[in-house]
Image (cartoon, rainbow, N blue to C red; front, side, top):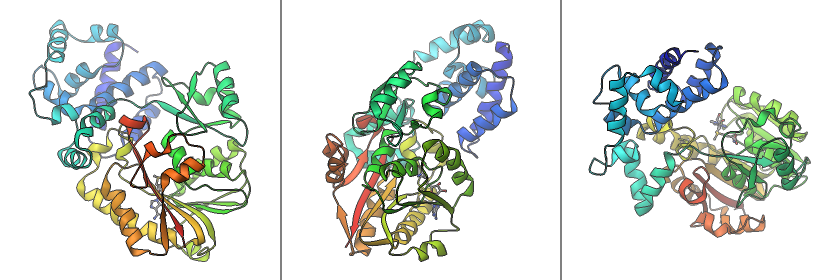
Length: 418
Ligand SMILES: C[S@@+](CC[C@H](N)C(=O)[O-])C[C@H]1O[C@@H](n2cnc3c(N)ncnc32)[C@H](O)[C@@H]1O
């Protein structure tokens, strides 16, 4: 494809993504499905350029106030992630001069929003929560995330998986906290490796692995993954249970549960029972009331802890959408808790950074449910051989931050039913 044609496609894709009516990853995948002629590198360039604009949208829009041509073209020239030769083939000498000049502008004396690139409501909430840690967090949220993997201990060991991946050209390091985790650099195409097709490894952020560990799920138990989605945590729970007992994977989205099927087949698990539910008070939940040993509620949330991967979420969420999520989270947690037997374990988790979806939900649940005793997440993780577990928690809750722990932002609260 000629540089000019690639720029034209980038313009079209950026225009679609910046409408923010659909998740950016869905828009990008649908676009690539329509543009079959695009090669791997071209796709990479388009996606990375568009994501760079979304990540630092306020800064780029400010810089693009000068210059000529359509706004999309100016944004692409500023954020271009492809080769310089393409840039030189497409941009006029004046445009090249303009890009070089505006990129040197200092934003130090400009309003904060041009540096943190967050909507005002979110920046305010995070500043209140984090104080002087706000800026390190804001900076980390503008960087792309690395890729973490989880070794499937049902099929292999972490060091063995690391060795076979290395043989297949993928270098990894053990993650610092999760005993199953491996961290890669760059973006390797994992699904072409035999280690992956044999089911010995899955993609999973280290933070998600720690959430699964908080359940302490064991052999022979009855366990529910209440909001299982495509089953990232289900697979980890099934392996913790050593493929014994019964693990229900519930979700209201049949479409998401369908994505669990091929992953289950690779994983070697046969103790998982995926089931679509209509809502959190579905009859199936009532029938299982009081019978379950462990329940993980990986609640639907704003996803703001994943801004490194999904930077469009900051432009798609709002105080209104967060308020709606809070109501949903409260209802799901209350309903899911009824599944537990006395002595059973409840874990509520989100990938949100906001107190409203995290500590406030957990505190309200504790106040309304005196029969649930809060457990200290650091003690639970230490029992699961997580090193330095106390550095991962605050006030007894798991609190992971991209700038501190190099994971996505995660929260979890743990209770035991009396
Ligand atoms: C954070 S995602 C789950 C991610 C998944 N646990 C994983 O590890 O890949 C939240 C999920 O909650 C589901 N959900 C939304 N409302 C629900 C409800 N009332 N009951 C159960 N699941 C619900 C969504 O469909 C979504 O898949």
